Length: 488
Image (cartoon, rainbow, N blue to C red; front, side, top):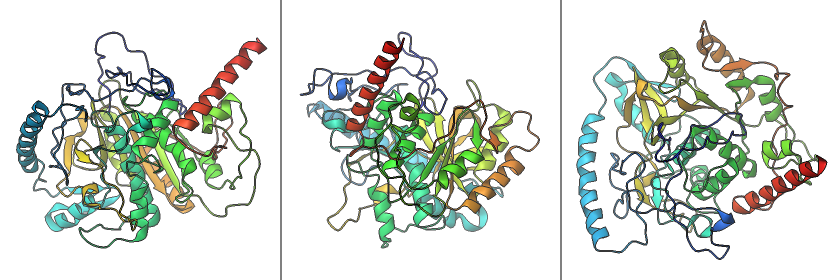
């Protein structure tokens, strides 16, 4: 969820610099309410955990989705606590449910694609509305669609049991990563069909994102890993913060074995990416306590073991700021060109208070999947499959004018093989960097000499992710600070 440009009451402190070298926009902290906890009056790890309280979300917007009601249960507005009394709460939900149904009908009409000869681009694939509109809709519905959920286990044991009102950027990050995993295991042209049996790899991918603390890319893991990036549980994330969180969580994902590279200072370094994707596997060792190693990958392993032959599939994320308050028109053509690349995973971004996952464009309109729908928690079945109907958007996708885009975005690309990355570099040189006085980002061959040395991140010496990892690394920071004081 992107923050409003004008903070609410008081003066909001600037967000801390992320490990990618960029700052997320200034964000006011959402109102919070303390919960009793056996770990202390401030809850898990001493954090203030913002809780749903039934008020309107920031920006005065309720979660009235244009995607329709969820598969099970009633749609609830964001920021409504599960612990509220029945009665007035039930009547309000009924009113909002009827209101959402009206919005859905109107939205379906407004979102219908126009009659045009212009091509539609969706994640590197071109569609023509006059001849293959049905293929276009099938292509969109095949993307995994992650939305607000409710009634999952409380984050951290005492935190929120719904991410409605604050988790939309995290959901967008999940969608981008899920698309990378689909391309890795099933291929870009894989199609999803309702009630059709899907391969085991598909269900395994989906299980990575279920709202359970033991799933590697769940809302629980992302929210708790965000604490290490300076974001309290329940606080809004920017595109760069989500990118840094995915980079850290991927270190624990041995099945997918992705190399996640997040660019720094609008610069993609070819030498660093190839070093990371061809680096040998490393065995567990004692994590060194230097500040640089801690910030780069929450601790590095020192001992090496057997080699891992071949190219490690690359998830490349490029956080960008394409203007000050509005997107600079000089970047529009280059931004749209990224959706034409066969390696495209779309973009994370949106408007103030609303994060979207952008998957393509038509003319001067961006096409996106909207996470602002509250659905009930879905778990896997005993046989490992997942009832996946609520994880696919089966309506015409949303569109918005590209000039309404907030300038804080993050581009995503997936390169399964080294030749895919080489091809991406050629396309960037030809289509993105060609004769532009103001470049959207830079692509350089060698590591800049004034930068710190690049060390490929490896899995830290820990037995868990999430809160316990954050707690241990926070203690490491305290030891470093004490050491610096003693040194002085």
